[in-house]
Each structure stands twice: as C-alpha cells, then as structure tokens.
Length: 96
Length: 229
Image 1 (tube, each protein chain N blue to C red):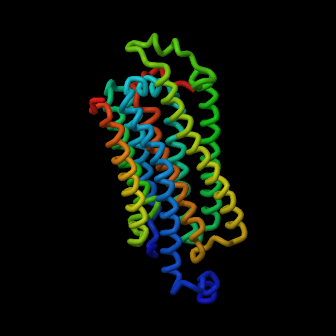
Image 2 (cartoon, rainbow over the protein chains, first blue to last red):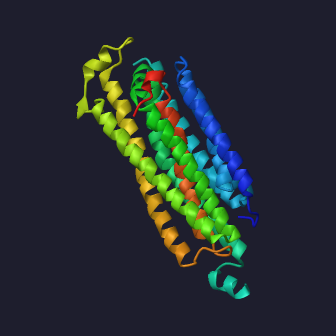
Image 3 (spheres, each protein chain N blue to C red):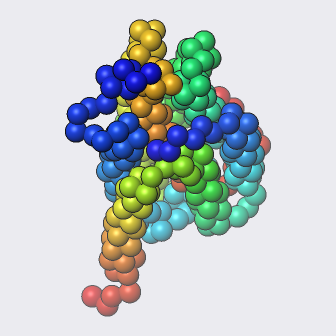
C-alpha cells in the first residue's frame, strides 16, 4: 500500500461507469440473444469487477505482493475451472 | 506524530509502510481463498449451464429481474460509500466517515431486505425446488423445459445467493464494529488499516454479486412485463 490517496472525483467517475454498465447489461437481457446472454453478461461483469478491484480496492496503487496474491487466486481459479471442465465437457465425446 | 507511529507499529515490522503492505496482502490472500470457495460453485454452475442450456435459460427468465437489478445498484452504491469511508479516514474527516459508514450499513441492510422480499416472491411464484414447485408449468413452455433441470438451476440460485447473503451479514457485522472503533477515535489518518482491509472484503462481496447478476438473472431473455416486485 503506497501512501497515495485517491481523489473522491475518481470514485464518482468509476461509480458512474459501473451504473452505466449495469443498465447496459440489464438492457441486453431484453434482446433475443440466446446463448450470447451469458457471454455478454460475463464479459461486462469482468470489466465491472476490474474497475472495482483497480480503483475501489486500490489495486492500482498496491504493492507487488498484493498483486501476487490476486494473480495466484485467479490462477488457481483458472486451474479449477479448466481442468474440471476439460473432464465434464468432453465426456459426451467419448464412445462408451 | 512520532509517538503515535511508535504505538501502532508492531515490533516485528521495520516500519509502518511495511506493516501496511503486509496487512493488505494478508487480506488479499484471504480473498484468494474466497475466490476458490465461490469458484467451485461457479464451476458447478458452468458444467450444468453448458449441459442444460434451455432449462437454465427458462429458469433464469423466471427470476425477479427488477429486484435483482435494483439490488445490483444498491450494492454498487454501498461500495462507493465504503470507498468514501476509507477516503474520509485517510484525510481525517470524522463526520464524513460516520456518514459514509452509516450509509454503507443502510445500503447493505436494504440489499438484504430486498433479497428477503425476493425469496418470498420466489416462494409465491412456485420457484422452490422440492418444496413449492409446479413441474407442469415448465413442460407446457414452448420450447418445453425439463422440470428436473430447472430445479437444478434454482438450487444453484439459492446456494449462490445464500452464500453471498451470509458474506453480506459478516460484512455488516464488521461495519458495525468499525462504527464503534470510529466513535472511540481509533480510525485516524495514521491508523486506518482496519477500515482499509474491511473495505477490501466488502468490495470483494460486491464483485461476487457482479457475476451473480448475469449468471442467474440475465442468462435468459426477459420481457417488459417481467419488471415487478
């Protein structure tokens, strides 16, 4: 944690962006997008989560040790999901 | 100033900056384990979401979009007031700190209140797997949905939102403790790490919800008539 203090203006701008993205993602749910609903929703979610982490959670000004903890968490999540899904999603391909 | 620094610096740290970096990293390590707790449920959801797309979309379209969306905005607002509380502590504005902390608690309580109202409306709408559910409603849809798979999606809905609500309750408890600390004058521009790391936890719970919104509520196609309490 560095000694820098984020100005409140930054928080208000991030908040306005988060609200705009929420209205966008809810608006998209009224369109007939089929399976793309989930893709669009998760992508917008990733943008929102990144904004929260970088600005509200001060990751932008955090030490490398904190970044390491965050990246380790995300890396393990990646392992958890890819290894599990590579099993379950390929089972229908197998000829029993 | 020097004596104040001395009193809060634990003896095994070189200086305050090192201590603060360690405290921040400690909370992030805890949050990494939280990512995995929620990650396991998200993975389970993904497996069945891919396997039974039609049934998950049908169930999602029946969830209460209006309350889910309002709650998203309520939670994002509480993250803003949380960030402002930390800011107020850092710049030594005691009155702003108390106002923002109180607002965060009120917004958190609003979220949980609306969530309870939503669970009640889900009960009224026969969306409780095993207890209050009408299989016939789902087979009559065009195209029809499999009631068993719909109940699976609803089970994910209750477990995911329930886990999230438990985290909110813990966060509310921590916020009340922060109010007491602030009243005792224990949150100052020098001594601010308690509110900083509890803020990290609060924002993390917000991030979980940011992903619950599209996965649960927005995965099916909604219509204007869906917007009701």
